[in-house]
Amino acid sequence: MIIKKDSKIVKAKVERKSITLKAKKKSRDEECSTSDSEDEKYAMAVREFKKFFKKRGRFVRQPRNDKKTFQKAVMTRTIKVIENALDVATRIILLKNVQNHQKTRIKELLSKALRAIAVKKMMRRSKMKRVS
Image 1 (cartoon, rainbow, N blue to C red):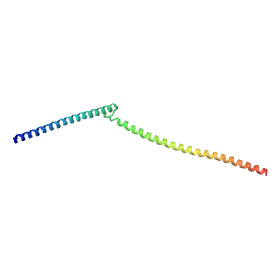
Image 2: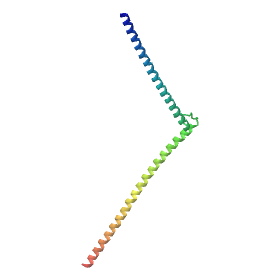
Image 3: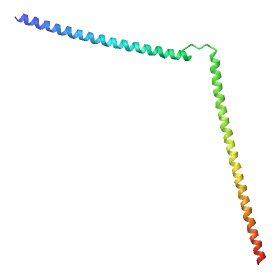
Image 4: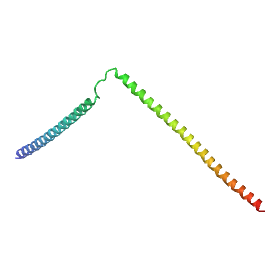
């Protein structure tokens, strides 16, 4: 009797273990299938990315003559920077000239106004001298 009970217990344990193993295998298979699909999605995205850039001329091996075009591009960039610096320098000089011109104009206007005031004062003095 005890042996029968023990054998039943052992069989029940074996069945439980087999059920858990089957469940683990199923879950692993599902994980593998999802990871495979994710890998395929990633590979497709990479292919699409490469196709996109191949159409634009990137990811394609450039011939050696393109080094010259790169050097030309660098030279044009430096020329543009120099031109911009010269433009800024000329603008500064022009601003200084304009400011100097404005100062001289203001001085001229002030001197004209002062002359007019001085003339008026002299006229008043001369009138006062005549009256007295």
